Length: 312
Image (cartoon, rainbow, N blue to C red):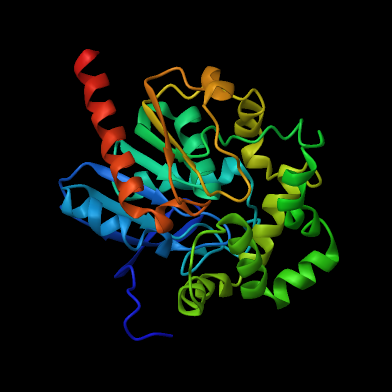
């Protein structure tokens, strides 16, 4: 690995719910808290440039490694290694509790955007504002068998691969290789090099990574049940609840899987103040590809939250 490749750290640890979470904490302790949530198959370094920008702007910036990724570990061997959306959202709330944070701006993409949307929908009192790449990401699991346009289906090949035991074997043996294929499809304009991919792939060596990833995709396609402790939350999420907190949503103009939208199709899902932006030359991993645009979206979301509080 390149000696000059920056690292996002130092890593800290905190017991939060069922997890022992590895996380980065930058910026002033009394700054507005913002939690940056990475996707799959990525790691905390999606925010290697965003986090310092926000810390310099006076935010307290928290970047956790999601369950099954990097240094984050389950505290109990008996805990099911699930990756369902309700679990991801609860992990965010548990982290806020563990750090003594009452409310925070949540920002993410892919899995991280979904976790942020879930937390915002189910626990709006804990979320000051939301930034979400590709908008409303709560999964419609009951509708998951409805076919999409073939071009979109092709981009989701790994969803279906992971339903099989061949997919389990492939993910176990080819973690970095599968990530590279997904990255190149997701972000055709992103000129990442081997060192950047190698840095992220370290997070995939987590002993629970394969189990969490497989459960996430099998659950979202309604092929396996979720954990019993999340039945109530999943029942609420099945109603596709509205997000009421101030939100900034982003579409990358170079996203290989998700076409740019005008946001109208999701308008009913956001009932609070909302701004929608297009980001040129950004693929699916938008914060790493266009960090200043993502940081500015967080600043804008925080401003919307202040305006909403002042108007209340």
